[in-house]
View 1 (cartoon, rainbow, N blue to C red):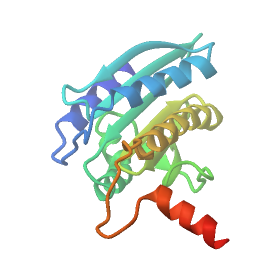
View 2: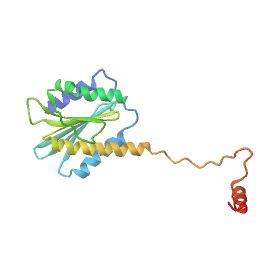
View 3: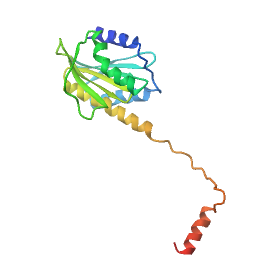
View 4: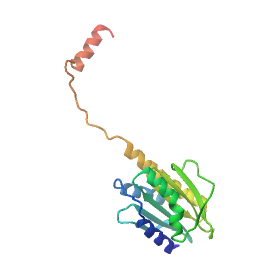
Length: 195
């Protein structure tokens, strides 16, 4: 499994598709890590791998003899990410993981998702999903465990998205409209008229 992960990261890093970080995603990556550490205390992060550009990140987690691998890819556009999600089985096959996409999807997980298992080695199962321009692949001992970890990542993505969508408070600026009377005078006039 170690060799497969290394080969997969190399294949993806050298892939001709254009992926870029649209912004600094270190806060998002820290949030993903924090979410997993808090909600899965029996699992420990063994290794985090990241390409130099930061467009691919892999987390290796262990609990006893079980392991979970989480792969996060950042794309330039939603369309590129959707193509990346569809192409994951082909890309991972080059690393030795022969994913068979299953008909089951997970409700309310990302914008689109699918479950999968290795066609030759039933020990490898997982979930892949896309949320906006980000693709996440989770490899686990069971679909249930994969779903649990995928949900942690999805929650971190949602929290990060809502944090970045909130407009920053603008400083109050007083604007004088030509010909308008001051607000205090307007209020006094309205009160005198009995409105």
